[in-house]
Length: 361
Image (cartoon, rainbow, N blue to C red):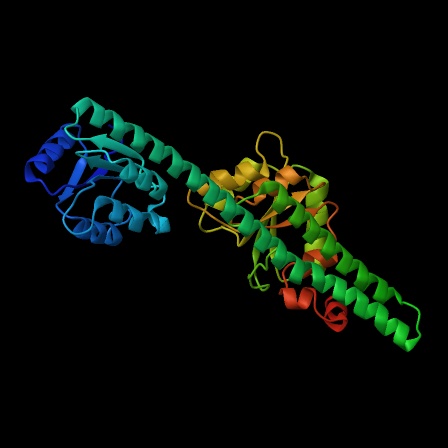
């Protein structure tokens, strides 16, 4: 038996109880045996997850097996627990009451050992399938709850904030009776770009239905001063552009570029040259950006990653959601102001127009 089930036997006649114990132990079941329903009920309440099946006599001193059955079925934690009733005589009313209350099977005493084995095996197999189905349903519900919560958070903050800022800028222009300036338009464009990114994240979240940590455009809490950044791309033109943008917009950062992912991997694994951040293209011949992440993780090196891509595909976003250390997608061609903003706190990125303009001289 791959699973060792525990069976609770409730029988007041010592000889029958001991016989049941011997029969069940012979099949390698774990057995707990009690001689009354009160003790059995209390044991079940205190150990609801330890008992896989209850085998109980109907006629017991004090509370009957039917009374215990009724009390157990009134508690949700015992909805699926198989309960087989033993009885010396089968009264029609007892059978009906047992069926109404939720008995899974009746076995008449004296019973045949093979009949008992078959009844127990059938109920345990059914219990295992029902439990697996219940867990699958719970997992699905948890995923849906997580998905709805993520969308609610995205909608309430990430989506609403850029829209609110755009409307505020338009309202301000209307109230002052002024035409929109170039700064106004650039500001609103930046907010629309932020909104576009968030909507793509929502789409990826809906398509992915991931229950784990979700991929989000999060703040990268790195110091601007002397931040070491490795950029990996087999397109030399993109690396040249990155060098130019870093010199202009992030001169305080230290950028090192690699056109060969293997060379980059060697440098990253060297503790003396290890960067704070890696910016990597997705498609680079034999080694993709995701392959680079995986190979580093195999070496127990987990560093923040920005994914560099010419187009954002849902499949790529869904895969990125599986990694806790993927923080951003950077679109080619990279915008210098965008590159500067992603190093700043979200309050500065999407706050007032003054904060945006101060970050974009």
